[in-house]
Image (cartoon, rainbow, N blue to C red; front, side):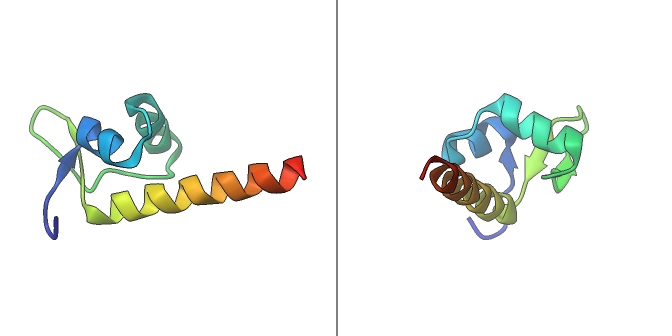
Length: 68
């Protein structure tokens, strides 16, 4: 997956997030697509997978801390 670009649905599948969540991240500036197709579809590079996994782990830690 070195230089592979993923469509938003593919990124959602790999990360376990929803397409809507990824669109929201784009809208608020948390995770911008690296490129867009001529039709405007979002394309994400390998760093997006790492970033979304990191954010998911941070969320779990915050929730765990708040519960205990």
